[in-house]
Image 1 (cartoon, rainbow, N blue to C red):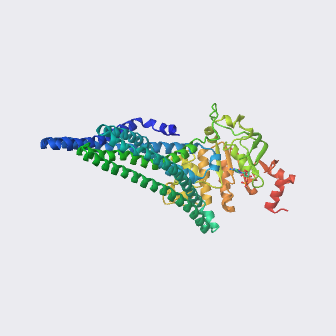
Image 2: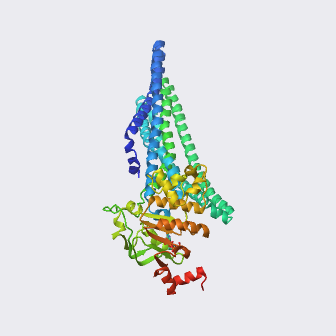
Image 3: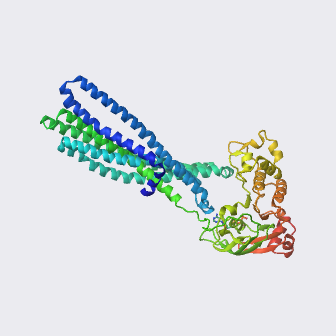
Amino acid sequence: MLKKFFSYYKPHKRLFIIDFSSAIFVALLDLAFPVAVQWFIDDLLPEGNWGKIVLVSIVLLAVYLLSTFLQYVVSYLGHKLGINIETDMRQQLFNHVQRQSFRFFDNTKTGHVMSRITNDLFDIGELAHHGPEDVFIAIMTIIGAFAIMYSINPELAIIAIIMVPFLAILVTFCNIKMNAAWRNMYGKIADVNARVEDSVSGSRVVKSFTNEEFEIARFKKDNGSFRTAKLVAYKVMAWTHSSMFMMTRLVTLLVLVVGAWFSFNGKLSYGELVSFVLFVNVLIKPVDKISALLELYPKGMAGFRRFRDLIEQEPDIQDAPDAIAVPHLNGDIVFDNVHFQYDDNKAVLQGIDLSIRAGQTVAFVGPSGAGKTTICSLIPRFYDVNEGAIAIDGLDIRKMTQHSLRSQIGIVQQDVFLFTGTIKENIAYGKLDATDEEVFEAAQKAHLEDFIASLPDGYETQIGERGLKLSGGQKQRLAIARMFLKNPPILILDEATSALDTETERIIQQSLNELAENRTTLVIAHRLATIRDADRVIVVTEDGIAEDGKYEELVNQGGIFARLHNIQFQEV
Ligand SMILES: Nc1ncnc2c1ncn2[C@@H]1O[C@H](COP(=O)(O)OP(=O)(O)OP(=O)(O)O)[C@@H](O)[C@H]1O
């Protein structure tokens, strides 16, 4: 895990070297100060040469100024390094999530992804900055300080250093405790985020069931668990800090008393005693640093582990190494003995054979949960078949690149997702490099222009969270305009109009019919009136394809479809 962590430093090698070497200088200057003080007291003061004292003070001032500058460099560039690594990781995570297939989104809570992208990465960035630098400097300072102290008075140096192993044991013990506490806390905050995401996205459902109190109670529980987890983490942290404080002050006191005794017996000069006390502070500084790192390390590493867990989840749908970018599809679709299941529990499709000719409009009807949407989701390879194959224009879709395949399939669903932005941007989502003229033309074809003209800002009207709210019919038209722009040879209309009232449905249907012209169109519909003109109707039941034929033929057959037809048109 550490090796993987360090690989993120590679692109920022230069920054790391500047930051690291500045930090080494700062540490060296820290070591020089007590030596200078000792020299000052023991040699310069007794000499009584004021001119020399002033000169040495000026040199010390220069050293301080240099040290201050280097401190600035370490603080700024160090954080820059941390932010750079954090930004790289965030981008990598976002790119990775974009590459994921449907199965990932089926199984992942948005709130959990949000947690990784925000909270986890803040701590990783901090660790990236402080981690290696602080450990190295701390070890170097301890060794350097001890060496100098030993050269002055070995006995006192050993007394001072003897406490360090105890501190190390304490540090390790606290590390284990803190690690567990932070890991737990991160799990809890991810739950809180997921709960917020759920209740905000599902606010309509919450309100329609008047379940606000229930949501509040659920949130209170998660929020409470998070509070408890964080409190435990802080308790461990407070305990760690206080024990560390106690230990370090004990060392100072011990050195002061023993040093005073040595000095009393003529084994230590006053200058040496003062420099020893100062050195104890130099010695304690790295321990403080390590204690701060102790707080950061488990948090950052827990975040990093979760980040890696997500990054290492390879999308289950990937392009074959020799996948072909198909230039233009005609839209002949063939299902050959297709078996499919979402998970191990239940087979959804078992041995589906189906052949759709380019340009045909095929309607899928049948009971809820029979697998109509599933059949259509397999064509753009949102999921891969478990057995059998799907071919378009005679080529297995697994041999095509996902991009070239999906860019030739348009899907209009009941739920239209609009992005925050203008009407124009939302239509142009169907073809990112569309010219204004193309957008206007698409809007015209979707019969949107009158509506857009009635808006004060026309195409530039903001929609989404902080802008205009569109009705179901208007959203649907926008989705149709997107499709006119995308202009795919294969079109899937998944209950596109079922959320609309009959009048709006009739009008939208007209746009959909225009959209479907000259394309292979698959329509999933519950209202049979919308599929009367389909070239073929396929009845899907849990046992597979039950009926297949023209609308009138199926009605005359007197089977499942005829029954559905009779129920809807009350011809019984
Ligand atoms: N993402 C998913 N993960 C697991 N199971 C799923 C998923 N989507 C659908 N299913 C299951 O697969 C079966 C077929 O669902 P599908 O949505 O294809 O049916 P449908 O015929 O389109 O239904 P409806 O008419 O209600 O939309 C159902 O039993 C459903 O529970």
